[in-house]
Image (cartoon, rainbow, N blue to C red):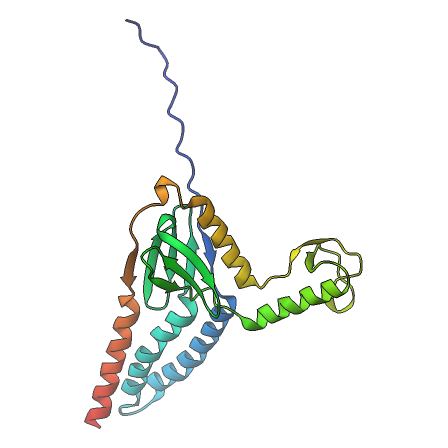
Amino acid sequence: MTTPEHQSPAPPPAPQSKDRIYRSPAGIAGGILLLLVVGWLGLDAVFVGEGRTPWLALATLLLIVPPVVAFTLRPAVFAGEDRLRIRNPFRVIVLPWGQIASLRSGYSNEVVARSGTKYQLWAIAVSLRARKKAARREAQARAGGRDGRGVRPGGFGMGGVPARGAVTDGPARAETDKAMDELRELHRTREKEDTAQGEVTVRWAYEIAGPTVAGAVLLAVLLAVG
């Protein structure tokens, strides 16, 4: 029995595709601005205040900062090949695509699991203003005889209105609605895959709740002792 003198190396593993990440730019900007204001006022009271003022300021910071982070900087949606991970203010929900029944859009965007449980997508908040703006753009396009579809670069006239005769690519849609369309398409193509099966997991964000509760208790004690 002969053996080959040279054995070809095993092929390298296929690279893992990166998750698509959806976050709210407006929420992040608002959160940073709010944290700067709260931090400036609070730290000034901590280092300059007298008597109980520094302790009251510290307790207030512990009470306010974690919820601000939770509702502005923390929310995100991570869409991978096998599962959807939702990071909401106080929970992290992981749903394999095979466990998702539907993705709904109404006054809020939410995921419905096959068990019937609904999970809101805080990072992809519905903007009725953006929907109305997209509807106006589509109405303007239809009035110009362009079928309500988006315009390719260079096809805009005065004031950002599509120029007459511009070539169009697709219907005008709000950004959050586009994000939901992408998630629905990924769900449709991946829900039957073997690697996209499993159980739904939910983890509470104790790193947010812990400091908030500590701040509330400290503030209550300080106010109680007078």
